[in-house]
Length: 57
Image (tube, rainbow, N blue to C red):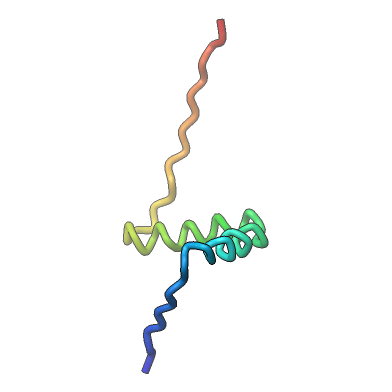
């Protein structure tokens, strides 16, 4: 049986989360975002890449 674990933190402790993600490589961060996106969206579609070229005057 899997037990749910809930951890309450004060707002002062949120710096630990930032330190955790800064310790990860960019590839690991992108993979984590993809996992969260799939959980939220429920599909395997990837983010759409958009390029907009503007001419400077």
